Image (cartoon, rainbow over all chains, first blue to last red; front, side, top):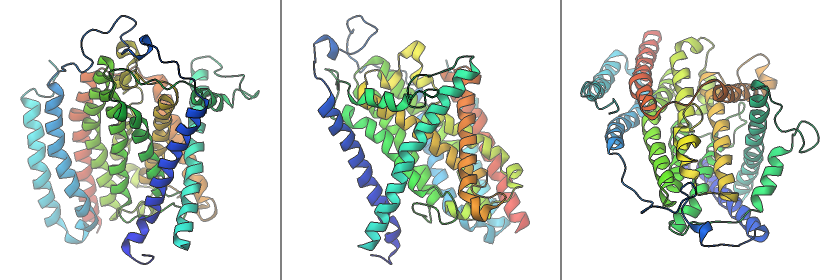
Length: 122
Length: 319
């Protein structure tokens, strides 16, 4: 374990455990100190003082959906950038050109979305 | 066994930093904002200029009742604040203060940091969704839309720095850094900082928690300790973003006397960036939701792509 590649990740496991312990300790302290007087009104969803209307999980604008698609397209591309970033200097202009073509395709996609009016709020 | 002990020791040092630095930034924000607005800010707690105000707040929060709304999804509602907070704690482990002064130097440090920072936002989204409240839901969806818009330029300019340095290790990036990178990576610096602000939902990008229109967005139903954890996550986020900006773009511990005072340089740069974060909050009004999206997709993403091109050409031309 001590000389393997994963040994570098041991502190990560430790910090996750310590973090969870920290949160648990905070809430344990809270549990010992806090009052508990739950009333019906206190547990209602907050809608500025009046009784809540309908359900909390309401329908929302589909506009956000399109941004999610755009994001997925670009996020996949960004992942490929990182391994390439560390080696491309040795590969020279050819590799830069290849990456430019790759990103260019996606940039054209963004331009298309822009021209189609996806990015303007209606 | 000694490995485990050493790891534990490193983690405890990070824990102290994690509990201390956000409070320093928070207190600096109280006082800096107050003086910029011709007020004095907290003055009583701790006798001297209200230095203990946030400690007093913490003591208050820990004694508060734990209210879970009737319609909420209780399990998700309860763990959401921890999901929002812990990623910043984990990220602090890999950010270097000086040469060798780092919790754990990972080969893929930059990639790890960018990946883990995104998780914090999921905590906010979980809180917004599980509250079963219309304001919370709207706020949560705005958080998600904002993350998706700004994560992209954030990651792209991160990749630009990795290309310039030829490594993904944060320590390696600082060692490769040269002062003229301030110009070469200048666009990246601005894009990274602005996109980071937006990911933390700091003003002027605080549409998701816009108090004048959707109460407090995803945090509407939260109170007491869980609310305090969300706020702590925000300030830990400021520390992490400032430290990352300092390490990636401002040269981290590089500066005069870097051999003996390197860690001090990192801290000074981090706090300077944190001060700008506070300053921006006072200086700019909140942006509207459509303006937010337009700034990201039509402003920052093209700029980030331009920065990538500049970096690629620069590296190959000088190689």
